[in-house]
Image (cartoon, rainbow, N blue to C red; front, side):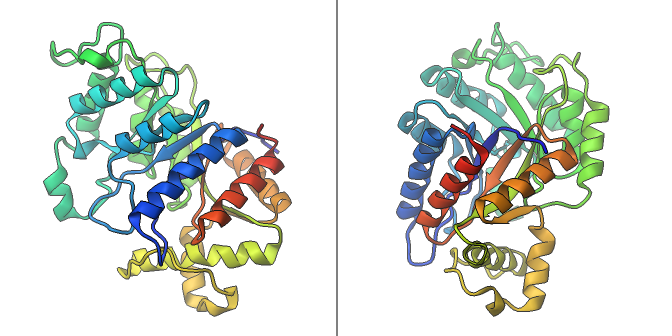
Length: 333
């Protein structure tokens, strides 16, 4: 069984009966708990045009979480680069790296993290593979020792010599090939897009070029997403898991809601259960022992170097308890 570092992905989800302020407070509390427990990273996603998630101003979340913690790395999972001017990303993350040396990660994605109308209002750069690769090439220059973009004599100023680690996020062969050709670590979104996982990782590893001008590592490095709920009993874990099932059904059917309270598993319609499990099947739900075994099996099956955990719960206390039980089972601290 493969025992790898564990990290956390946070969308700052809002629960039914709670507010965005409550979600932000719970998110920062979870970061502090993760820091204490020994998780390697906590990353924040980027989503727009939804009152159901508080993760939109990613760099601001990172700054707050880093200020409240001491050890854990804090980063983006990810910055959706087509929504931003690349120079601005370099300046923001360069500033973060100066405030919190050695603790900031820049995960980059190509998806808009929203609907197409909102994406058009946000758009600042291209989302095609060629544009993404060019912008990452410039970012590595702005974070480099001379702080100059690779495509033009433009200085990143505050980002110079901060050497912020860049990660590529993806769920398809396009993202995998970009990460491989640029010699960068790859984060695969297996927690919500599990199809063709072996093919995607095969592309990344076969395309990996340690000699690329943008390369930051000398061999492929894969971090994979997995849905996790740990509880004291199997039944309680499966009951808490119904919140995630109801969430993904709502997202895919257009009936988006705040995170709903858990119900008895038998109360979820079989067709909805099957649909949710098809999308969220990369999961570890159960007692700490069950969760540890499943996570080790998954890490070994794809030869992952790190796992990033996604936990949806209606009650923030259930998420904290899950993180605590997992940390104990994994012997993190």
